[in-house]
Length: 161
Image (cartoon, rainbow, N blue to C red; front, side, top):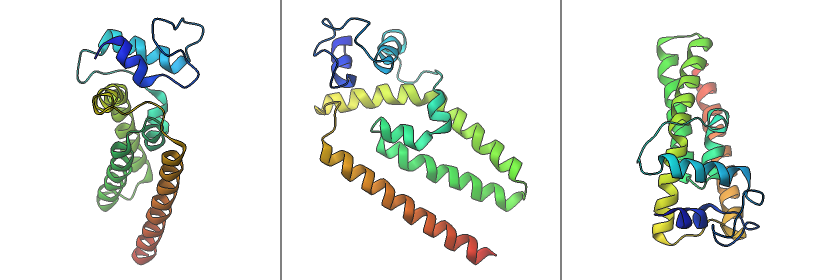
């Protein structure tokens, strides 16, 4: 994948069609940042970089970047960590520290996962802008899954009291 193909895969609707037409003023901050990462570290399959939103908004960041598998795996591992640690420790501080360390670890590789996902989507011929119907279906699906998870967790905590 070259820089032009990567640009086409990540560009927003209001940005120019080709990378050659784009100048620094019209590109969004995100597009500029990912193009810079692609140029410097895009040849590696996994690389470490910082991604602050992925630390604090992990699953939401993955959903925003259309990385749906990671958006569902992240909370599953998160709750798994909480469940395992709560069996051996009753301290909330220990649980919070392990969850924060897990979030930081995931965020270090979030950008490389995004670039690899962009390569995969581009190879399949998927464009960067999802249709309105798929966005609505994704939001409804996430809300319903979130409600289901909250109900299951509430039932679990009620049964353990």
